[in-house]
Length: 502
Image (cartoon, rainbow, N blue to C red; front, side):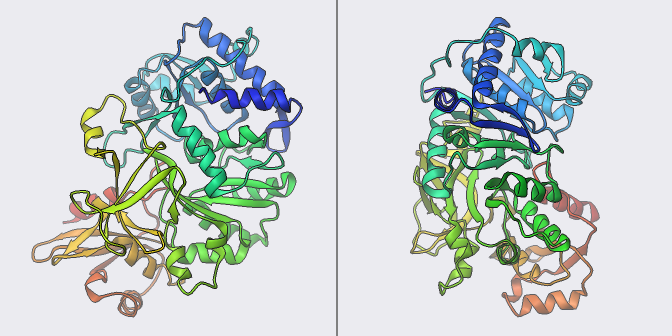
């Protein structure tokens, strides 16, 4: 089933329903949204794009993103979303690796690809070719696709090497979208989804379920994340749902407190994509109220591993509410989740191991990379590379990526556990804990801290909350932490800095 069919059905039933907005201005109802996608598909077909061909989207958040997106699907082709924050060379690598035939770009990004000598044809959505595409004869209906046909080729962030192309099928996105309704949140035609995070990733992948129900799609005029703009749009549109990385939630809370904003109009903020610290989510719920839902997923199982409902995020009555709040929730409907040892054998509740997932939301493999596929998909299970444990109630607590775990004197230290403690200090704004090579202990714990705090205070905080062997042996104070284009801290860069200093 081609998921572009969902757009066609909504347009047939609710043609006048408002669909696409740039800020407060409506630019398309569902009739014109659907017609634009069908015209794009007709134009793509005339350019020689065949079902299964890859078509890139190297664009900032804007309404044309979704029109081009569904136009690609209408034609039976495969969407290759590229984060607009990437360097031209990084985007060029993705286009080359995926054998992309054509790439839609937004103003300013075409030049970045030209400078990188990227392969293939490029179409700027502000130019004449795109205008001609929107005027082309439309196709009659979406090209038929099988459930397991490739629909979305997603490239991982590549924090440890070259990005890998995750093959995502129409079936995977269908099941993920339906699991959203079952496990994450309700979506209706009265809602509006706000794209403040890159549409090439978690924010954009939730567009399908909102197209299915006929919701409004709102792109900020800024094209990205601006707390003041988000609060203004939420007051205007009402019933706003949005996806936000934990760093975005932290910044929204700080901005709201400083400006006296209450979050009026925000109905749901789904957070994920990185570690959410207990202090940050507790502060956010205290300020905004019960609007938060957590999801846990990977590109290899998009948005679909586990979820923590708004009721559980806001609950303070359960005797173990803190434990549940630092978890990533329980398995979503479309998957099985277990914790395995080094051989993948299930371990008892409470015991640490690698988080393993299987189900119809799990990828069939990486694009043209059999070696990486064989390492990641083992006996039908996705080996996530994330370490954690599951309690007797099915709540999964993720500690860290397996490569980030520190082994000091034969004992395991999970950096997130130390980071959680350090972040309870009011003067610590950000922190990242990594291991440094030590001649006697193998590794020692080092904390990079953003903030001005006496080291003795941090030592005392750790001694009062965690075992002494987990306490950092050194604190390195920095004005900021290195992050990739998705807001994730680059621990590889921090470890590299330690190696250079040594």
